[in-house]
Image (cartoon, rainbow, N blue to C red; front, side, top):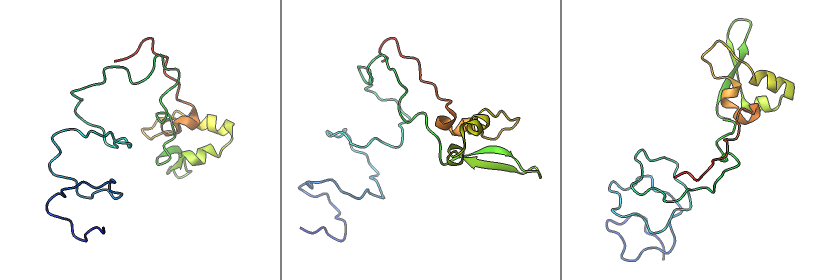
Length: 144
């Protein structure tokens, strides 16, 4: 059975056996009344602004935790940080990839920079390279 070239006006009587491989560019204007019975294998990329009416009953992690959650302490490779000013006073910006290529003495010096400026510094954007992430202390009991 070949798919039609034009979308149908009414839903089909028999659901397809496999989910679509191409996401809709125009989501439904009216959300479904009930939640899906099948959980998604992919987490949402947009967080809800409204808390759940049915929060988790049990903790989502075992307690105590002994390491930070992965992904919270990493370099932002899409951001630049202030490095220094040129002789003409024009600021120079670099990225975390540039910083990672430097030796440890240079990395430590740049990561320790405190500038009287409102510009983003290396320690603000290159969290992993600068080692500014410290693990959260283990929780004493499960959090709910």
